[in-house]
Length: 130
Image 1 (tube, helix red, strand yellow):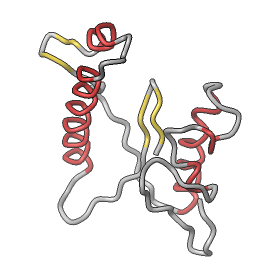
Image 2: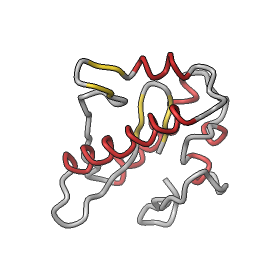
Image 3: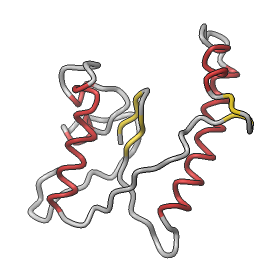
Image 4: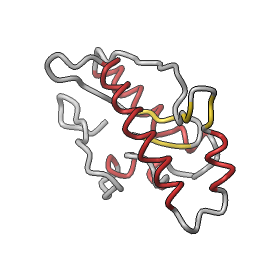
């Protein structure tokens, strides 16, 4: 998983009847409320008013864009390609020199370090970490 100011990218595998559309709807709803609340309640956030104004729409408050770009991970090669792409985004943006140095990325977990979140590191069929 990687989060930066332009996007949030992660891998998801549904269980049972939970569709990707339903998962994304619920994920966006929950995280939007939590992020806006965290900004509102942060006493040291100097950009509070500016940030909250960025999320205002005619319908209320919206943190996420309305569109999604889900990609099916149908093979080990595709999983490898997408994980590499996700982890390299902060490097390409010039935020860090190494993917594992970006605080909001699971790249550090794949490099054998502890990240901010507990994640399941995906391993290929021959035991290598993607």
